[in-house]
Amino acid sequence: MARVGFIGLGNMGGGMAANLAKAGHDVRAFDLSADALDKARAAGCLPVASAREAAEGAEAIVTMLPAGTHVEQVYRESVFDAAPPSAVLIDSSTIDVATARRVAEAATARGLLAVDAPVSGGIAAANAGTLTFMVGGSDAAVAEAKPFLDAMAKSVFHVGASGAGQAVKMCNNLVLASTMIATCEAFALAEKLGLDPQAFYDVGSVSTAQSWSMTSYCPVPGVGPESPADRGYQGGFATALMLKDLRLAMAAAADAGADVPMGTRARELYEVFADAGEGATDFSGIIKTFSQASPD
Ligand code: NAD
Image (cartoon, rainbow, N blue to C red; front, side):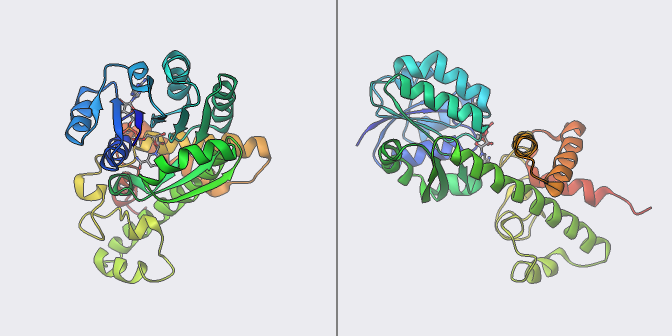
């Protein structure tokens, strides 16, 4: 088994690092949060004092950070200098395609291998080791990364060159934002029509209203499998992060000349929700917007 550096032990990274440790790897884990480090220790990782220390001597270095600026900073200030030659850098954060390509090129110039490997599945899949990875990079880099990804994954897809994983992830989350909002507005309407939300779920989850947003991550407390709705919309996938992803998708669509009307509206709605002080709330909490709205 190998030594793995893991940087960013938040809602997603905590479970992912734990699964690498469970697979027998020697995981050197770093986060700015002392609480996250304590949880990593309890999960079988060795907490270290810096990103540099996590990278030293590691065969693979996984980053699970909020955005591209964090990844670029951690790579340039710590990882590039500390990683042993031929280590593979696996960035699983959701970031913009341009930054993903830039850091991969900088890594390659230093003799390191690098992949962008964002994920789908949410915290339940991160904890269970059943994430879907969409991976961009060279065949050689993906081959090196694969055994480490397998310890955290249900599926690993090599989707193209550097940045391609982030492009797939951006399109995936464009769909996710729209299905979540559609699911929320439908549950709010069902309630106003006097329906029991469970009755709507029972039918919708096995008919054409079905999506991951309804079936696996239902925004209504007490309905469907356990989800952030059952924890007051805490933890999960922060609204601020969904908004970040939608902004990345809008910028990419503008560059590519693509028409994205649903994504544009989703971004507007998430902007209003975040501006109301809900940036740290799970993105399914946007149902409150529709539940509270009173008919004119
Ligand atoms: P999070 O905010 O819970 O975790 C990020 C962690 O990074 C925090 O613990 C923070 O302390 C740490 N961090 C920030 N800067 C750091 C630094 N310089 N050095 C070390 N640690 C640092 O976020 P999350 O929900 O785990 O998401 C992480 C990434 O995964 C994001 O890019 C997000 O878009 C993506 N993602 C999240 C989900 C989800 O359901 N939460 C699903 C798929 C993808």
